[in-house]
Image (cartoon, rainbow, N blue to C red; front, side, top):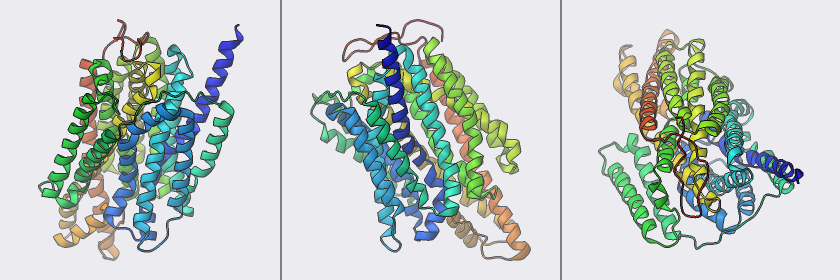
Length: 523
């Protein structure tokens, strides 16, 4: 009899390893492209809009199709859907790497980046559900702490690997996914996780509403820097997208087989966890884009050095993720989330204050501190939300939490990216204007920079050096503005968690369709 739990534990560990390799590809691809954008644009001759959608198309596809992916996993079998997601992701990665030159390049690479996102959306909800169902509730915090710690740390592989691979050939940043996918498929065959199904009609109408709503809202936010915040196109996209999301919620409340059981959010603890995740992801994923471009444009680092710059963040993040998982298992999520919000806000504020000095050494302690704060929040908030679901709805609930997370990333990148472009244009006009450059020339330099193409305005000698220094300071000032906004988001997260995230841990979950309140305990 004692051998059964040990056997189950070994089986769970194999499943955990398989899902880490599978999902690890998707985390790498959240960041690896950002650092290679200048080379991709130069080689393929992409437009500024095309460059933006290479990054955002992937994130948007993730957020818009996650809920559907969770339901498909529940309906058709999680192991089968994970395997399908891995194959789709790997094939799309190979085709991104095979992007042809010429007029076909831009639609080609954007299309297959979107397909990558869809493959990830199929894969991740089912993968998380398999990990969760492989462990008893008292071990899930530790298991998911390992899962999110490793996969989150793999996000750091994106900038680092992207930096080095770009120096060889930017196409290799996509091809790196192929061997990882093969390892994941082999491990899935070894682990043989359960392929249990809970068949139900799929809410295609709801899928269309949420996909269209998210896509239009992000489109409006993303394009605001080009169209203008007062443009009818910007306002129309945001308003129509918001209305479609509202229509989706109303539809889900009235249909017998909803894509997302919106009433789940009547559980205040579950709703609070998801608000925390949304706020956190406004900061977390966009950080990689802004920090890597800051390292290259303001610090003048190579792509490989820019990748190493982000490694400091993950030193703090990886350590704190493990600590956060243990806190969750012992006393619940609230202490880790509250502490993480405060520590993260302090870290980002101090990091931002050093950006304009252009000294990496001065920033290192604060980069680590910022990563530590984020790491304390992510795993406990995500795991606490999932722990409140009956076992038969894990795929659906992970789909909900990941939808919230990735939509937060998409919204954050769109809004903060728009602010960065606008603020950088103003900073360049001011700083280069002091050097005697006309406004039109300063605007052109700002436009070049926003698409990842550094410019010195065509000057030479001492003037070129002064212009380049002005560009560095301008971009540092613009990034500083973004980091101060991120600080503000984490302050909001801290106070929200302090007020709304309940004390205590989830001791058990009731039957299908109901959620227990947390047990009383220290918070």
